[in-house]
Image (tube, rainbow, N blue to C red; front, side, top):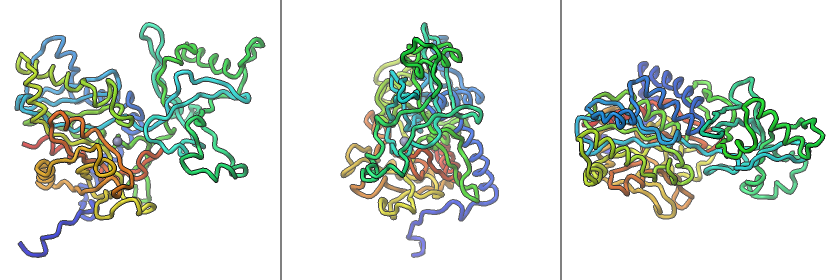
Amino acid sequence: MSKNNLKFEFKNIWNSADKDLKSKIMDMGEDYKVYLNNAKTEREAVNEIVSRAKEKGFVDINEFISQNRSVEFGDKIYAVNRNKAVVLYVIGKELIENGVRIVGGHIDSPRLDLKPNPLYEKEEMALFKTHYYGGVKKYQWVSRPLSLHGRIMKQNGEYIDIAIGENENDPVFFISDLLPHLSADQYKKTIGEGITGEGLNLLVGSIPSLDENEKEPFKAKILEILNTKYDITELDLITSELEIVPAGKARDLGFDRSLVLGYGQDDSACSYSSMKAILDVENPRYTAVGMYMDKEEIGSMGNTGSESSYFENTLAELINLQVGSYTELMIRRCLNNTKVLSADVTAAFDPNFPEVLDPLNASRINHGIGFCKYTGTRGKGGTNDANAEFFREVVDIFNENDVIWHVGELGKVDQGGGGTIAFILANRGADVIDCGVPVLSMHGTFEVSAKADIYMAYKAYKVFFEAE
Ligand SMILES: [Zn+2]
């Protein structure tokens, strides 16, 4: 080996992209924006993923279970958990007991939820109380158009799904900020204190009801409108699950259109690319599993988060349908033999904030999929630190298949940190490493990813699924 080849340098995809790769990157960028627009919340993401999966021949796991239909090599199966999480399976040649190959991401994103009792009036305006969900910077949510998405539950299981504020003819909603002229006191506060959680109240109307007996005419008018439009009452509003997200569609960013600006790219960037990958997988050696989970932004708890037993329960069902019997030892062996890419976004090096990242160990846009060997805070606290053996195995798969990759850490040592779902499956015995798409302005109301990285993540996840 010549001494010139001793160094390893991470590459910018565009320095070596030929015409064919360039057009694949740009084509996928178009479809990615469609996905972002259709999947702004976890429920919408489940609908989008399931409808794309059905088009590719995936069948509901409940059909297999109810018919006791045996699971065969090549079968494509989806399992929906309470409309808020979904798992896709392509059954491999090996028995499930011998381990599966998982790419796991999440489909919830930071946002504002309505409080259970949201509607009130003040100063002749009607407003909704909110409670933020996940790691938001509160000041980013004021003074911008907002939309309302979610499910309103009615009696006897009836429900209405809404998304108001995305269509250009829809009304939008809004949280006011203080005018600069009167901000002398606000300016003295820290950026974290300038806008408070209890101050994130959504303006939803300003015309009073003309019913003279109404003590709260502005609130009453909103209830009248909701009743006319959706046939609902305040009780139905209380039992609904409504989420506020930035209004507006994902857009190309930059003169060269190399970037995508859009809400929810943590973790739609990885969920989209892993969905595209598994939808293109046919007859893998090991069963391929795409996980699209809820509640990652608030700790993965609850029955739709990654900590729930739902995923293992579906694995147990599939083992039972594959071999006609089931013992606990089979699922324990399966998890122990399983290999996982935890598909979550990484913090891209930001020229506006170079001080928070170590340039030698920072993710960069257009440098392909970014590994995070570990995340955590204060000395790797709380992280899954991937084993060298598994890290190298994945790197070798990527190198053999011309996947452009690099490594990064989530910030300088002691600067902060974060976590992903990686530790959850690692705790169950699987080999896991984090690798995902670098994103600028992560957790912002609008985030930025590079189309080249979305394509490279797709390629990375696909070759991992297909590895012998
Ligand atoms: Zn994430």
